[in-house]
Length: 126
Length: 107
Image 1 (cartoon, each protein chain N blue to C red):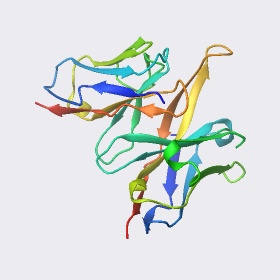
Image 2: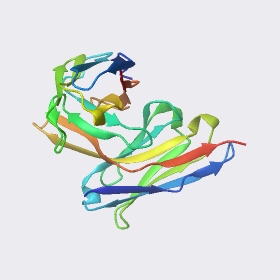
Image 3: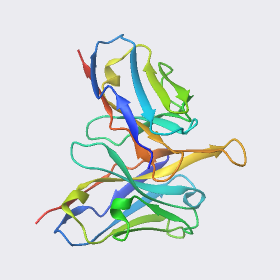
C-alpha cells in the first residue's frame, strides 16, 4: 500500500524550532503536490501548507506564514516542515498527506488528501 | 478564506440507521468537496472526493451529493465500525479548509 511516515515531533519551548520529516513509499513522490495538516488536541483539522511537485510553488495558512517553511527533496524522497518561532497554539499532531487528484478539463482539477501519514505530535510548552 | 460549516456537530444513532451530515460552504465551490472519516488516535481516511465519487475500498453505504454551497454525506445503514468523526474539506482554493467535524456516536 501507498504509505507516508512522519518523524521529528517532540517537546519544544515557546520560541523554539523543530523540523518535521515525511517519508513516502510505494508511489512516485515527485509526481504529487504534498501537504501538511495539523490537529490540535481535541480539535478539528487545519491545513498548514502545501508544495508543488518541483518545489516551485508553496502555500501557507496565514497563522504560520513567516514562521514555517515547507520543502521537499525529490532525490531523497522526503518532505519537510521547518517550524520556527513556535507558539503554544502550534501544539498539535502534524500529518503529511499526498494531494491526489485528477483534471476533467484544462481548467477543472479536483484534489483531495490521500493517503495520510500516522502523524507526529508537536508539543510547545515551557 | 472559504468557511466550511458542518451540521450537526454531533449525533447519536443506532446500528442500521440512515445518517445524513450536511456541509455548507461560505461561497460556491462547485464540486470541489471531499469527505473524510477519522477514528480516535488515527489519521483521517478519505471517503468521498469531488462531492460524490466513492474512494476505492470504501463501502457503498457511504454516499455524497451536492454542488455549489450545500453538500451531504449519507450513510445508508450505519454499521458499528462507522462510529467516528466526519470532516468535509474544500479544494476550490487556498487555503484548503475543513469543516469543524461531526461526531457520530452510538445511541
